[in-house]
Image 1 (spheres, rainbow, N blue to C red):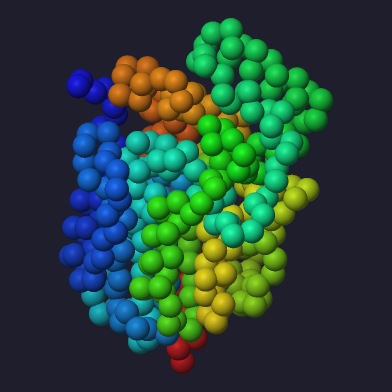
Image 2 (image 1 turned 180 degrees about the vertical axis):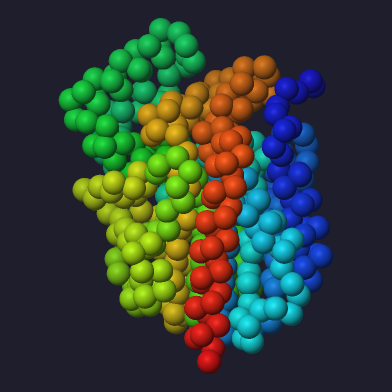
Length: 369
């Protein structure tokens, strides 16, 4: 089969670069094989690199690719940091754990979601109980399930979306759409009805590489929300947590605190009505650890533009051909929304991410004294 799938930015390249840099840095590597393949038939996995004592009491964790296509930013930051790491330079009793592309299928296929159309930041739920019930989404679902990319159904969907925005305003409509839903598997921001492969793998990683720590900082790396080229440092949880005061003391006014839940809005552009975030999952899984869960969110384009290209990619995987010429155009547009080709943008977010990690490592070093 001929494929026109973009190869300019590829999962295979990112993984090869990460593994090479981690090996050169002296890291211990563990791989978690994914059951699916990429668009070129390549095998997929999530890789974990540990630098320093794996039993260290204090650990800094970097997590890339929760939203697959956003993983190119996170992966590049991890690779660049590894390339400049000096073996033996970590403070005593401090380790660095790099989780590379927790949603490898999404990164490989240039999708924000996973192989089951699941948004991982809506998937960390208690599936033994009642799931969040976003009933308002049902009235909007036809906007995202239409069979046309440019035809009459798309025109009707666009008109419905415009009418909803005119009546309720963009923030209110997006709070419903982005809040996550578990009722429509073919819908947008679907949270799933069971733990995804990435969810289960993250918990394996927590057990193997994070449990046993006393103090832990985790940085979940994202793009899309916020002002262009501005990396926001956030801590996103459902409620205040024990180490929040310490997190604020380290980062001061740079840190934005967001507690998610129904009827919550945020000027950051991050979905505040959603639950099931990775940050909260870490807190739930490590109750005895002094855990500071952070998110670095690097702004790209206006929310309405990002949303439009997300809709196009959603249509592509419901009704189109991701390997065809139209698929290539849609994929390149989506990649630009979440990983701009602008070298100044890339340099800025890379620099700021390294600054944030450096400050975290310095704080962990003082905690060991």
